[in-house]
Length: 426
Image (tube, rainbow, N blue to C red; front, top):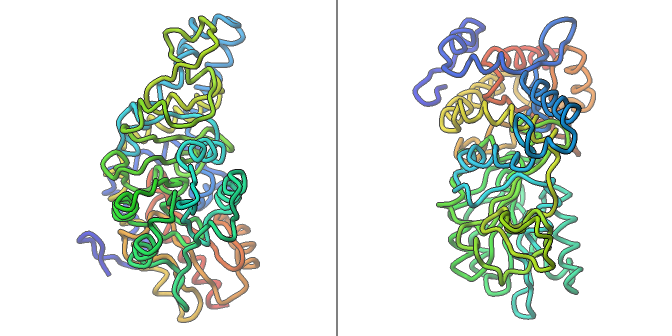
Protein backbone atom coordinates (compact mmCIF):
# COMPACT_ATOMS: atom_id res chain seq x y z
CA UNK A 1 0.00 0.00 0.00
CA UNK A 2 1.17 3.54 -0.65
CA UNK A 3 0.30 7.10 0.35
CA UNK A 4 1.47 10.26 -1.42
CA UNK A 5 3.80 8.15 -3.53
CA UNK A 6 5.30 6.33 -0.52
CA UNK A 7 5.05 2.54 -0.63
CA UNK A 8 4.61 1.31 2.92
CA UNK A 9 6.51 -1.65 4.33
CA UNK A 10 5.79 -3.56 7.54
CA UNK A 11 9.28 -3.42 8.95
CA UNK A 12 11.18 -1.57 11.64
CA UNK A 13 13.82 -0.68 9.06
CA UNK A 14 11.20 1.10 6.95
CA UNK A 15 9.82 3.01 9.96
CA UNK A 16 13.29 4.15 10.97
CA UNK A 17 14.07 5.20 7.39
CA UNK A 18 10.86 7.27 7.26
CA UNK A 19 11.79 8.95 10.53
CA UNK A 20 15.30 9.70 9.29
CA UNK A 21 13.87 11.35 6.17
CA UNK A 22 11.15 13.26 8.07
CA UNK A 23 11.81 17.03 7.82
CA UNK A 24 9.80 17.55 11.04
CA UNK A 25 11.58 14.89 13.11
CA UNK A 26 13.42 17.38 15.34
CA UNK A 27 10.14 18.69 16.77
CA UNK A 28 9.80 15.46 18.77
CA UNK A 29 12.70 16.63 20.95
CA UNK A 30 10.70 19.73 21.90
CA UNK A 31 8.26 17.62 23.98
CA UNK A 32 8.32 15.68 27.24
CA UNK A 33 7.04 12.10 27.02
CA UNK A 34 5.68 10.08 29.95
CA UNK A 35 8.13 7.31 30.75
CA UNK A 36 7.46 3.59 30.99
CA UNK A 37 10.25 1.64 32.70
CA UNK A 38 12.60 4.48 31.86
CA UNK A 39 11.70 4.59 28.16
CA UNK A 40 9.40 6.98 26.30
CA UNK A 41 5.82 5.75 26.16
CA UNK A 42 4.18 5.14 22.81
CA UNK A 43 1.91 8.17 23.25
CA UNK A 44 -0.99 8.08 20.78
CA UNK A 45 -3.56 10.14 22.66
CA UNK A 46 -2.74 13.68 21.56
CA UNK A 47 -6.35 13.90 20.40
CA UNK A 48 -7.29 13.90 24.10
CA UNK A 49 -4.37 15.65 25.81
CA UNK A 50 -1.25 16.78 24.01
CA UNK A 51 2.23 16.42 25.45
CA UNK A 52 4.00 19.18 27.38
CA UNK A 53 6.37 21.31 25.30
CA UNK A 54 9.78 21.71 26.92
CA UNK A 55 9.42 25.49 26.88
CA UNK A 56 6.04 25.51 28.65
CA UNK A 57 7.56 25.37 32.12
CA UNK A 58 10.16 28.13 31.51
CA UNK A 59 7.48 30.38 30.02
CA UNK A 60 5.18 29.85 33.00
CA UNK A 61 8.06 30.32 35.44
CA UNK A 62 8.93 33.59 33.68
CA UNK A 63 5.42 34.89 34.34
CA UNK A 64 5.56 33.69 37.96
CA UNK A 65 8.90 35.43 38.51
CA UNK A 66 7.57 38.65 37.02
CA UNK A 67 4.58 38.47 39.36
CA UNK A 68 6.94 37.87 42.28
CA UNK A 69 9.21 40.80 41.44
CA UNK A 70 6.79 43.29 39.95
CA UNK A 71 3.38 42.65 41.47
CA UNK A 72 0.70 44.67 39.72
CA UNK A 73 3.30 46.47 37.61
CA UNK A 74 3.71 43.24 35.66
CA UNK A 75 0.67 44.24 33.63
CA UNK A 76 2.91 46.73 31.85
CA UNK A 77 6.49 46.00 32.92
CA UNK A 78 6.73 42.18 32.71
CA UNK A 79 9.12 40.75 30.15
CA UNK A 80 5.99 39.98 28.16
CA UNK A 81 3.48 42.51 29.47
CA UNK A 82 0.28 40.94 30.78
CA UNK A 83 -2.10 43.55 29.42
CA UNK A 84 -1.58 42.61 25.75
CA UNK A 85 -0.35 39.05 26.45
CA UNK A 86 -3.14 37.39 24.48
CA UNK A 87 -2.03 39.31 21.41
CA UNK A 88 1.19 37.25 21.37
CA UNK A 89 -1.02 34.38 20.19
CA UNK A 90 -3.23 36.19 17.70
CA UNK A 91 -1.23 35.99 14.47
CA UNK A 92 -0.05 32.45 15.22
CA UNK A 93 -3.64 31.38 15.85
CA UNK A 94 -4.83 33.06 12.66
CA UNK A 95 -2.24 31.17 10.61
CA UNK A 96 -3.13 27.92 12.35
CA UNK A 97 -6.82 28.07 11.39
CA UNK A 98 -6.56 30.00 8.11
CA UNK A 99 -8.09 33.24 9.34
CA UNK A 100 -7.31 36.92 9.53
CA UNK A 101 -5.95 38.20 12.86
CA UNK A 102 -9.10 40.29 13.28
CA UNK A 103 -11.15 37.09 13.22
CA UNK A 104 -9.55 35.15 16.10
CA UNK A 105 -9.02 35.41 19.81
CA UNK A 106 -7.74 33.03 22.50
CA UNK A 107 -10.06 33.12 25.51
CA UNK A 108 -12.17 31.06 27.93
CA UNK A 109 -12.77 27.36 27.39
CA UNK A 110 -14.56 25.61 24.56
CA UNK A 111 -18.06 25.19 26.00
CA UNK A 112 -18.05 28.72 27.42
CA UNK A 113 -17.10 30.04 23.99
CA UNK A 114 -19.76 27.91 22.32
CA UNK A 115 -22.42 29.43 24.56
CA UNK A 116 -21.13 32.95 23.85
CA UNK A 117 -21.26 32.31 20.12
CA UNK A 118 -24.77 30.87 20.25
CA UNK A 119 -25.94 33.94 22.15
CA UNK A 120 -24.98 35.89 19.04
CA UNK A 121 -25.66 33.43 16.24
CA UNK A 122 -28.64 31.37 17.40
CA UNK A 123 -31.61 33.71 17.24
CA UNK A 124 -34.64 31.46 16.71
CA UNK A 125 -37.96 32.64 15.36
CA UNK A 126 -41.27 30.86 15.01
CA UNK A 127 -40.45 30.07 11.38
CA UNK A 128 -36.72 29.35 11.83
CA UNK A 129 -35.96 27.74 15.20
CA UNK A 130 -34.02 24.54 14.56
CA UNK A 131 -30.37 23.62 15.12
CA UNK A 132 -28.78 20.93 12.96
CA UNK A 133 -26.06 18.82 14.60
CA UNK A 134 -24.67 15.28 14.70
CA UNK A 135 -26.60 12.81 16.81
CA UNK A 136 -23.17 11.60 17.92
CA UNK A 137 -21.72 15.03 18.74
CA UNK A 138 -19.55 15.38 21.83
CA UNK A 139 -21.87 15.41 24.88
CA UNK A 140 -20.89 18.91 26.00
CA UNK A 141 -21.96 20.26 22.61
CA UNK A 142 -25.24 18.42 22.89
CA UNK A 143 -25.84 19.83 26.37
CA UNK A 144 -24.96 23.36 25.27
CA UNK A 145 -27.22 23.23 22.22
CA UNK A 146 -30.15 21.76 24.14
CA UNK A 147 -29.85 24.34 26.90
CA UNK A 148 -29.74 27.20 24.40
CA UNK A 149 -32.86 25.87 22.69
CA UNK A 150 -34.67 25.62 26.04
CA UNK A 151 -33.44 29.08 27.06
CA UNK A 152 -35.22 30.54 24.04
CA UNK A 153 -38.42 28.72 24.95
CA UNK A 154 -38.20 25.98 22.35
CA UNK A 155 -38.07 22.19 22.61
CA UNK A 156 -34.86 20.18 22.08
CA UNK A 157 -36.98 17.21 21.01
CA UNK A 158 -38.62 19.22 18.26
CA UNK A 159 -36.05 21.88 17.42
CA UNK A 160 -32.78 19.93 17.30
CA UNK A 161 -32.33 18.02 14.04
CA UNK A 162 -29.90 15.18 14.68
CA UNK A 163 -27.92 13.70 11.81
CA UNK A 164 -27.51 9.92 11.99
CA UNK A 165 -25.60 7.52 9.71
CA UNK A 166 -27.51 5.25 7.36
CA UNK A 167 -28.47 1.86 8.71
CA UNK A 168 -25.43 -0.37 8.97
CA UNK A 169 -22.96 2.51 8.52
CA UNK A 170 -20.70 4.16 11.09
CA UNK A 171 -20.26 7.64 9.64
CA UNK A 172 -22.33 10.32 7.95
CA UNK A 173 -22.44 10.83 4.22
CA UNK A 174 -21.87 14.34 2.94
CA UNK A 175 -24.78 14.03 0.54
CA UNK A 176 -27.10 13.17 3.43
CA UNK A 177 -25.99 16.24 5.39
CA UNK A 178 -26.53 18.46 2.36
CA UNK A 179 -29.89 16.86 1.61
CA UNK A 180 -31.05 17.54 5.17
CA UNK A 181 -30.04 21.18 4.82
CA UNK A 182 -31.85 21.36 1.49
CA UNK A 183 -35.00 19.82 2.95
CA UNK A 184 -35.11 21.76 6.23
CA UNK A 185 -33.14 24.88 5.35
CA UNK A 186 -36.00 27.31 5.89
CA UNK A 187 -36.54 25.95 9.41
CA UNK A 188 -32.87 25.88 10.46
CA UNK A 189 -31.50 28.83 12.40
CA UNK A 190 -28.07 27.31 13.02
CA UNK A 191 -25.99 24.47 11.60
CA UNK A 192 -23.64 23.45 14.43
CA UNK A 193 -21.26 20.58 13.71
CA UNK A 194 -17.99 19.27 15.06
CA UNK A 195 -15.73 19.44 12.04
CA UNK A 196 -14.06 16.19 13.19
CA UNK A 197 -16.32 13.87 15.13
CA UNK A 198 -14.69 12.93 18.42
CA UNK A 199 -15.93 9.32 18.36
CA UNK A 200 -15.54 8.25 14.73
CA UNK A 201 -12.74 10.57 13.62
CA UNK A 202 -14.76 11.60 10.56
CA UNK A 203 -13.91 15.03 9.14
CA UNK A 204 -16.77 16.87 7.45
CA UNK A 205 -16.71 18.94 4.28
CA UNK A 206 -16.90 22.34 5.94
CA UNK A 207 -16.95 24.32 2.72
CA UNK A 208 -19.83 22.40 1.13
CA UNK A 209 -21.87 22.45 4.34
CA UNK A 210 -21.30 26.16 4.84
CA UNK A 211 -22.26 27.01 1.27
CA UNK A 212 -25.44 24.94 1.45
CA UNK A 213 -26.48 26.38 4.79
CA UNK A 214 -25.81 30.00 3.83
CA UNK A 215 -27.76 29.49 0.61
CA UNK A 216 -30.80 28.81 2.81
CA UNK A 217 -30.14 31.69 5.20
CA UNK A 218 -28.84 29.51 8.07
CA UNK A 219 -26.01 30.57 10.35
CA UNK A 220 -23.08 28.13 10.57
CA UNK A 221 -20.73 27.26 13.42
CA UNK A 222 -18.14 24.52 13.91
CA UNK A 223 -16.56 22.93 16.96
CA UNK A 224 -12.89 22.49 16.00
CA UNK A 225 -11.85 20.66 19.18
CA UNK A 226 -10.48 17.81 17.05
CA UNK A 227 -9.66 19.98 14.04
CA UNK A 228 -7.47 22.84 15.28
CA UNK A 229 -3.86 21.74 14.97
CA UNK A 230 -4.98 18.59 13.16
CA UNK A 231 -6.59 19.58 9.86
CA UNK A 232 -5.54 22.16 7.30
CA UNK A 233 -8.21 24.81 7.92
CA UNK A 234 -9.15 27.88 5.88
CA UNK A 235 -11.82 29.44 8.05
CA UNK A 236 -11.87 32.85 6.39
CA UNK A 237 -12.29 31.44 2.90
CA UNK A 238 -14.60 28.60 3.99
CA UNK A 239 -16.79 31.24 5.56
CA UNK A 240 -18.63 29.85 8.61
CA UNK A 241 -20.06 32.51 10.87
CA UNK A 242 -18.07 31.26 13.84
CA UNK A 243 -15.93 28.43 15.16
CA UNK A 244 -14.70 27.43 18.60
CA UNK A 245 -11.98 25.06 19.78
CA UNK A 246 -9.96 23.93 22.78
CA UNK A 247 -6.17 24.01 23.03
CA UNK A 248 -5.33 20.99 25.19
CA UNK A 249 -5.60 18.30 22.50
CA UNK A 250 -3.48 18.70 19.38
CA UNK A 251 -2.42 22.19 20.47
CA UNK A 252 -0.63 20.94 23.59
CA UNK A 253 -1.60 23.87 25.82
CA UNK A 254 -2.03 21.79 28.98
CA UNK A 255 -5.02 20.31 30.84
CA UNK A 256 -8.09 22.55 30.79
CA UNK A 257 -6.27 25.40 29.09
CA UNK A 258 -7.83 28.23 27.12
CA UNK A 259 -9.80 27.78 23.93
CA UNK A 260 -10.09 29.83 20.77
CA UNK A 261 -12.79 31.63 18.84
CA UNK A 262 -13.20 32.56 15.19
CA UNK A 263 -15.80 35.13 14.14
CA UNK A 264 -15.88 35.84 10.43
CA UNK A 265 -14.82 39.30 9.29
CA UNK A 266 -18.29 40.10 7.96
CA UNK A 267 -19.49 40.25 11.58
CA UNK A 268 -16.50 42.25 12.85
CA UNK A 269 -18.36 45.53 13.24
CA UNK A 270 -21.91 44.31 13.51
CA UNK A 271 -22.89 45.77 16.86
CA UNK A 272 -26.50 44.81 16.21
CA UNK A 273 -25.60 41.20 17.00
CA UNK A 274 -26.72 40.31 20.52
CA UNK A 275 -23.86 39.31 22.77
CA UNK A 276 -22.86 39.00 26.40
CA UNK A 277 -20.53 41.89 27.12
CA UNK A 278 -17.49 42.21 29.36
CA UNK A 279 -14.86 44.87 29.89
CA UNK A 280 -12.05 43.02 28.08
CA UNK A 281 -14.09 43.25 24.88
CA UNK A 282 -14.34 47.04 25.26
CA UNK A 283 -12.41 49.52 23.12
CA UNK A 284 -8.78 49.30 24.30
CA UNK A 285 -8.28 53.04 23.98
CA UNK A 286 -11.05 53.87 26.45
CA UNK A 287 -11.22 50.69 28.57
CA UNK A 288 -9.67 52.34 31.63
CA UNK A 289 -11.96 55.34 31.51
CA UNK A 290 -14.42 52.92 33.15
CA UNK A 291 -17.40 54.34 31.30
CA UNK A 292 -20.86 52.80 31.66
CA UNK A 293 -21.48 52.08 27.96
CA UNK A 294 -19.91 49.16 26.12
CA UNK A 295 -17.88 50.01 23.02
CA UNK A 296 -16.96 46.77 21.28
CA UNK A 297 -13.51 46.06 19.89
CA UNK A 298 -13.98 45.18 16.20
CA UNK A 299 -13.60 41.49 15.44
CA UNK A 300 -13.40 38.43 17.64
CA UNK A 301 -11.74 40.34 20.49
CA UNK A 302 -15.03 42.12 21.02
CA UNK A 303 -16.48 38.90 22.47
CA UNK A 304 -13.94 38.82 25.31
CA UNK A 305 -15.31 39.15 28.82
CA UNK A 306 -12.44 39.19 31.31
CA UNK A 307 -8.69 39.59 31.30
CA UNK A 308 -7.14 36.19 30.55
CA UNK A 309 -5.09 33.86 32.79
CA UNK A 310 -1.47 34.60 31.95
CA UNK A 311 0.01 31.30 33.14
CA UNK A 312 -2.25 29.29 30.85
CA UNK A 313 -1.41 31.55 27.94
CA UNK A 314 2.30 31.19 28.67
CA UNK A 315 2.08 27.39 28.43
CA UNK A 316 0.05 27.58 25.21
CA UNK A 317 2.53 30.06 23.70
CA UNK A 318 5.27 27.43 23.93
CA UNK A 319 3.31 25.07 21.69
CA UNK A 320 1.97 27.69 19.30
CA UNK A 321 5.51 28.77 18.50
CA UNK A 322 6.25 25.21 17.44
CA UNK A 323 3.18 25.03 15.21
CA UNK A 324 4.19 28.30 13.61
CA UNK A 325 7.65 26.95 12.86
CA UNK A 326 6.41 23.61 11.56
CA UNK A 327 3.46 25.07 9.56
CA UNK A 328 0.14 23.29 9.15
CA UNK A 329 0.67 22.27 5.49
CA UNK A 330 3.84 20.38 6.45
CA UNK A 331 2.16 18.83 9.49
CA UNK A 332 -0.78 17.67 7.41
CA UNK A 333 1.53 16.01 4.88
CA UNK A 334 3.26 14.09 7.64
CA UNK A 335 -0.03 13.30 9.37
CA UNK A 336 -1.50 11.76 6.22
CA UNK A 337 1.54 9.49 6.00
CA UNK A 338 1.55 8.57 9.71
CA UNK A 339 -2.14 7.74 9.82
CA UNK A 340 -1.94 5.98 6.46
CA UNK A 341 0.92 3.87 7.80
CA UNK A 342 -1.10 3.00 10.90
CA UNK A 343 -4.02 1.98 8.69
CA UNK A 344 -1.70 -0.15 6.54
CA UNK A 345 -0.29 -1.99 9.56
CA UNK A 346 -3.71 -2.52 11.17
CA UNK A 347 -4.98 -4.07 7.94
CA UNK A 348 -2.21 -6.67 8.20
CA UNK A 349 -3.35 -7.93 11.60
CA UNK A 350 -5.23 -11.24 11.78
CA UNK A 351 -8.71 -10.99 10.18
CA UNK A 352 -11.53 -10.11 12.56
CA UNK A 353 -9.28 -8.72 15.31
CA UNK A 354 -9.85 -5.01 14.64
CA UNK A 355 -12.06 -2.87 12.44
CA UNK A 356 -11.33 0.77 11.55
CA UNK A 357 -14.51 2.87 11.64
CA UNK A 358 -12.86 6.14 10.65
CA UNK A 359 -13.20 6.90 6.92
CA UNK A 360 -10.47 5.46 4.70
CA UNK A 361 -10.37 8.60 2.57
CA UNK A 362 -7.62 10.87 4.01
CA UNK A 363 -9.74 13.89 3.06
CA UNK A 364 -12.41 12.70 5.50
CA UNK A 365 -10.21 12.27 8.55
CA UNK A 366 -7.38 13.80 10.54
CA UNK A 367 -4.73 12.10 12.63
CA UNK A 368 -6.82 9.73 14.67
CA UNK A 369 -8.30 6.35 13.87
CA UNK A 370 -11.19 4.91 15.86
CA UNK A 371 -10.87 1.16 16.28
CA UNK A 372 -13.35 -1.57 17.17
CA UNK A 373 -11.76 -4.73 18.54
CA UNK A 374 -13.34 -8.17 18.65
CA UNK A 375 -11.60 -8.91 21.96
CA UNK A 376 -12.77 -6.98 25.02
CA UNK A 377 -11.54 -3.44 24.31
CA UNK A 378 -11.43 -2.25 27.93
CA UNK A 379 -9.22 -5.15 28.96
CA UNK A 380 -7.14 -4.70 25.84
CA UNK A 381 -6.57 -1.04 26.73
CA UNK A 382 -5.39 -2.09 30.20
CA UNK A 383 -2.91 -4.48 28.60
CA UNK A 384 -1.68 -1.78 26.21
CA UNK A 385 -1.19 0.64 29.10
CA UNK A 386 0.82 -1.99 30.99
CA UNK A 387 3.11 -2.19 27.95
CA UNK A 388 3.67 1.55 27.72
CA UNK A 389 1.13 2.28 24.97
CA UNK A 390 -1.13 5.25 25.72
CA UNK A 391 -4.46 5.32 23.85
CA UNK A 392 -7.96 5.96 25.16
CA UNK A 393 -11.34 4.25 25.33
CA UNK A 394 -14.68 5.75 24.32
CA UNK A 395 -17.95 4.06 25.13
CA UNK A 396 -19.30 1.70 24.11
CA UNK A 397 -16.42 -0.17 22.47
CA UNK A 398 -13.94 2.13 20.72
CA UNK A 399 -10.21 2.60 21.26
CA UNK A 400 -8.83 5.76 19.66
CA UNK A 401 -5.24 6.04 18.46
CA UNK A 402 -3.87 9.33 17.16
CA UNK A 403 -0.29 9.70 15.91
CA UNK A 404 0.20 13.46 16.28
CA UNK A 405 2.65 14.63 13.60
CA UNK A 406 4.33 17.28 15.75
CA UNK A 407 5.89 14.65 18.04
CA UNK A 408 4.93 11.12 17.01
CA UNK A 409 7.15 9.01 14.79
CA UNK A 410 6.75 6.20 12.28
CA UNK A 411 8.55 3.99 14.78
CA UNK A 412 5.82 4.78 17.35
CA UNK A 413 3.23 3.56 14.86
CA UNK A 414 5.21 0.44 13.98
CA UNK A 415 5.74 -0.49 17.62
CA UNK A 416 2.06 0.07 18.43
CA UNK A 417 1.03 -2.27 15.64
CA UNK A 418 3.54 -4.81 16.90
CA UNK A 419 2.04 -4.75 20.38
CA UNK A 420 -1.42 -5.21 18.90
CA UNK A 421 -0.23 -8.13 16.79
CA UNK A 422 0.96 -9.87 19.92
CA UNK A 423 -2.49 -9.57 21.47
CA UNK A 424 -4.22 -10.59 18.26
CA UNK A 425 -2.40 -13.92 18.40
CA UNK A 426 -3.02 -14.55 22.12
